[in-house]
Image (tube, rainbow, N blue to C red; front, top):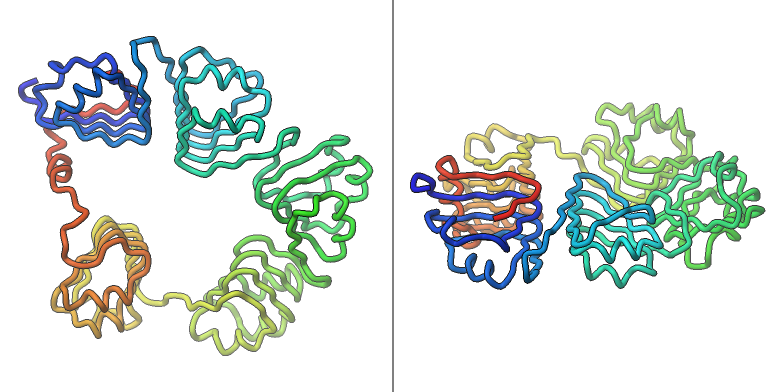
Length: 407
């Protein structure tokens, strides 16, 4: 091991209970990236003495060295009444986990469950959540319900498939777009829906009332309007296809090459529950529309630099970008010192970046043009030089990538 400076381990589950200090003492540095670290009192002491940096989501302490079964799943996973689980099983799910009612026996067999994603659990099993470590959203749903998609579109075939006397649950909302849905058939079958919101045409509201409890929020599409569900691009062709009165549940962007005069002739009414994004030159024509919306925004028409590790903004770039420069989704943005605050304010916009490096004189201007930026200035705070040096020397390291690893 004398020629191995560093040891790097990337895994879902790292079991350190059997590790021997002498096996790792020759490494200059040790880096362990894991979702779940299993330790006992002895291995904790060893790791504290070694030059180890550990990035873990969850630590599970188990005294003794009983055999642990590791099950790692990349994607969605369900725990149902048919799930067979060996004792002392650790489950790691990199995706969504759905726990069904009546699975107490399976849940009792799990030593630990780690989920990097969303979890759905019936309220009768909420006490078992102590076994879970969740890096994502948690949804508790009522027992004795059939689970639907979080956003469920109720089509005209559903009344034929629905089971008599059944309760159906959709976490976020149920959408009725087709006005031919036989809601009376669902009422005759004594079907009930549980959800937060119902999006429904106005003429079907009365028929929906018996199917939903009093807590549901009704979002009503006015009579005479066609529902467009979700974010959409608007042009005259959409209006010709869907109708001259549109109710958009979502946000709208106008097609850059939209024939505004044709749109004005075709579209009589537009209701948008979200924002509308247009080109600046489309504003005068758009304001002639009978339109309701949350906020009007203008499309960025300048240069865009995005999804990069590092971006350097200099005088040449800004002076040759008369419509401005948008930098977004970058780890680091470096502002050249010769850029004046005025030029920055006139030509640059920064969004969703981790750090912007600039001079003290530029800081106020950079703050004014930045949105969702973690750090602005020339400070080195927040950086980890030791780790950066370690990563730089990774080619001289022993690296292990595994689903589970025993030290």
